[in-house]
Length: 142
Image (tube, rainbow, N blue to C red; front, side, top):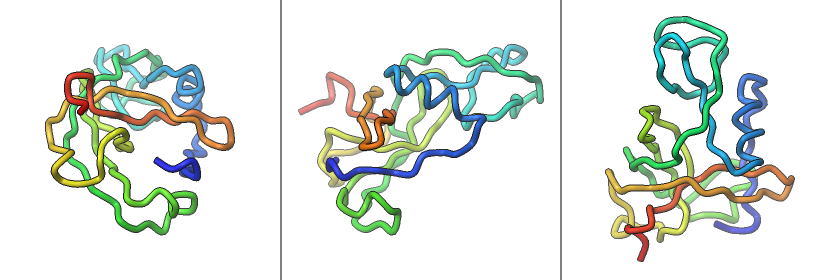
């Protein structure tokens, strides 16, 4: 990814613990104390049972590519200089799926595959915020 990479971040106050954890290089997600399960996207109540408030717990940061897309153009401010890049839905080992960027992999179909093991890493943005992204797991890197 380019040094000019500056995606917009969520303005939602419900996501504040997510971004605070990212600044500590941790992946934390909402966890329902009733269902005993992680979920994503951040919200004040569990989407399964409606219980709240929720807890924020650290995740392993490991998962698999559920699906992906190679972006050859974008209208998103701050990403123009980063094309081509790979966006992916990552299914975490803990269950939730989240959309992210796939880094440290060539943006071509020969380098990315569904079900590819990945792990979280963090990139620093120009505004000082850290962004959790995913890269191929250690055994998958070439």
